[in-house]
Length: 205
Image (tube, rainbow, N blue to C red; front, side):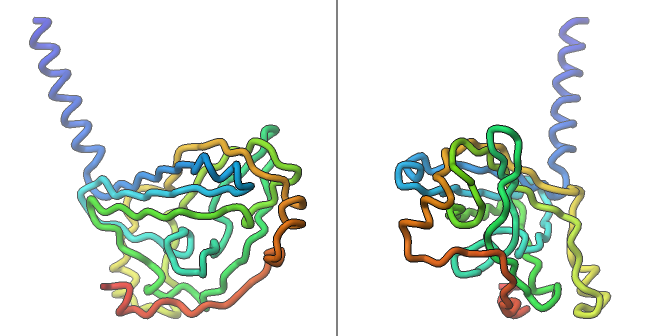
């Protein structure tokens, strides 16, 4: 009887595992370049993998994977100090001229996206110290109906996840003002910039 129970338990676990990966399933992993702290930098690497068996679309401006000259296009990371206070976002807010379908990128089953990001100038770390960082991706974005046909909107695959959260890492961030005093790069005050959305043909390639 015991062996029969264990057999059913193993079968149930296998079925549950198979069901859990049915459809799309995005997994975000965040790692830290430990040498960056010695250089007064906060450099992280984000990996986004679809380990499910179906494709899914992501709103690319909500990720670091879209081309914005090495900067984030908006606030994308949850950054808090040792007391739980959120670090203010000091990067830019890119105006893409709406939300056309070309801004939605498909991530196919088994596909992995990876990007190393310099967050040194993106967040205000105050006087510096340990900060916890986590990546957050909302999956509820949809194309603007005024910029997309009904067929284009219907073709966007959202999947079953409401959001994708990475693991949390802890970094030693340098002091914000001290760092700016030693560089010639202008302070990236919060501002809006306009960048043309990628052409639809290039997003399908």
